[in-house]
Image (tube, rainbow, N blue to C red; front, side, top):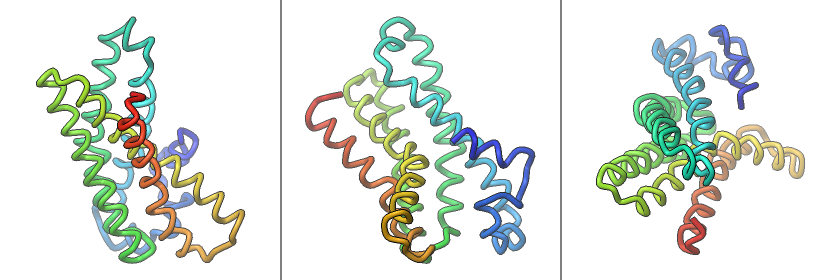
Length: 187
């Protein structure tokens, strides 16, 4: 994900994904800045998020957990989720993909906000559950790309068919796994 993000530095609209989004890039003034906000903030969300569930950091460095949690939540709520909803509205793949990405962004925002509100009330167990849900959605950036490789390798579907499928596969299995872990009280 860091490598993918670095392709967009400096601000470059001739890179991979944006090459197929030139209608939006040239026709919607806000698209490119909001896209960059999403890409650049999401990498910090992933990096901060991966540290949040480490029992050693939780036990030995609670202040690090707290500050990285603030970073994660702030980036999700102020930057990554709202920008994700915006660019999701313009997703390739028609209504099927657009619906998926907008739902993903709204749920990601809601789960993160709920987790923040719960920790402020010192409801640690419930906070943890909503953070698992939030991070499950954050990792959709990774799983979406994995599913794309798998589907293309195994089935060779048309590009828009792949996009419509991975729009949903990128996050629903992640959320189902998080829910399964919560129900099994593994977390």
